[in-house]
Image (cartoon, rainbow, N blue to C red; front, side):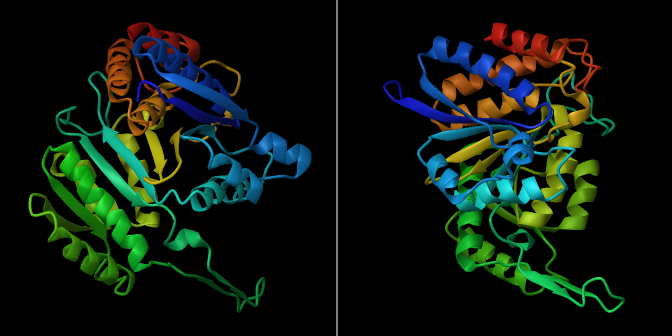
Length: 352
């Protein structure tokens, strides 16, 4: 990868997004120099402020423009003056669907000296990855209302699951379990006893693909039981694969057991195209401009981006420096870290 110049789109977004992105780029600059990584940054103003000024969210030509990049680094989308759903659907979902980022990848990893609400569990117990299907399910938005606003109102929302969409997600997860080379176990999380059509397709596909991976233990768990085990026995998991809705829910629980939103990073992956990396905690508008938000999740997103771009040595260096910073911080929560946003960024950058 030494001769390639990585083209990276940067979307600072809303609230504290630009603040944490700045720290991520600070670390990228240092690690880039150390490992001789060439990259070009292009900044975009997609987000709530632009929407309030112009009424624009993300149009088709802008999605097409993003396809020319090797990766996207996103801060956060969500503005207190914009009604819920407009930016999330119009920017986040539009990008994910338009760029066919069919994998949402969420490492759940507890670092040393990071508080977890799970009693008697440590870094050796909490280290798994959730592979969430990212372009189908209930988030496709099919359905509608009948007699809206009356006492007889009907609301229908359909979960769309295709064999192609389910299989490519499951196959990605099996390959990841093999690459991780830890427990070599893949757990399908679903609700086969109630969602008998959608998860019948998921389960049958899972078991068929599993035959091609005899070295990986194929496991199944109901989503409600999984929530219990995240808390009681997180060490049981290695790689998890699940649909869009369940993945959205269990990854927030995963974030809390790894120390909170301040340290949780995620990737929206198109293995054949452009992928987007972000801290999963949202825009946190109440902390905007106070220099108190935790940038480690955004720096972790840079780590994931580097790994995705094939810069694995640089990615490992960033993770080691994040882990070293965790040992010095009092907390992962905004305003309680013992350091400012910029100081944490400096600490990780210097650690590289």
